[in-house]
Amino acid sequence: MRSLALALLLAAPLAFGGAAQAQQPIRTAVDGTFAPHAFPKLDGGVQGFNVDLFTEVAKRMGRPITIDSASFSGLVPALNAGRYDFLAAPVTVTRERAENLLFTEGYLYTAFQFGIRKGGAPIRSMDDLKGKAISVNKGSAYDAWAQNNAAKYGFTVQTFDSQPDAVQAVVSGRVFANLGGNTAVRYAATRVPLFVPDYVMADTRAHWAAPFRKDDKAGRDAVEAVLECMKKDGALAALSEKWFGVKPAADDAENTVFPGYGVPDMPGYDPAPHEPRCG
Image (tube, rainbow, N blue to C red; front, side, top):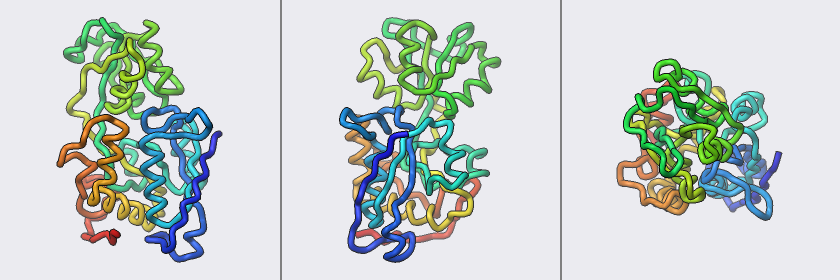
């Protein structure tokens, strides 16, 4: 397990308690193979959108932060075991997950998208997947969807420990398509010439948010307040454009401060109005 220790102390903490608390590092983790959200740097450690995002969150809170890199499938168990305070990895908010975890509001929208080998027949509908194999990152929301819908649409599923491995399976011809998040698929296409973005499942748009343990509402609310300030001052949108190459629309999650705490209409949502202290 690689660890990126980032000492980012400011004069006054914004949340998570007083001065003594401010000296305690925030412990969090990412899937360090999930570019462009988190991936290895040549000189060690990890880089990416989510690393930059939660480094800035910690900075604004006056806290140091330690970001571990681990397999996605082990992150939630480690969080529930108390190893981490929350997860910096992008986690899709589903009703099932929200029953067991406490989420901030969404900082990005995600949608399921297929990537195929360049020159291959485009996917025009789900019917085009019948009799074909698709690849997914093990333990992800795309893995869960694929396993649940394989029989319905007549495709088979191959799971891989990392998204790059899942993409490589497409390029090598082991599978017909990769199913992943829109940001990951589009980023991979900029790095792998034989891999191209294809069919987007428009009805799958969901929030990507930071999960906490169910008993840590104070921690969830404190981090959400900082995310809201980053939306208000444009910092979150700027990070999104830097890593994904597209300026977020005014109604995208990067620019939208949602009412209450958490994701509206999901378990764990707190509709109490609040005004974050920014500045």
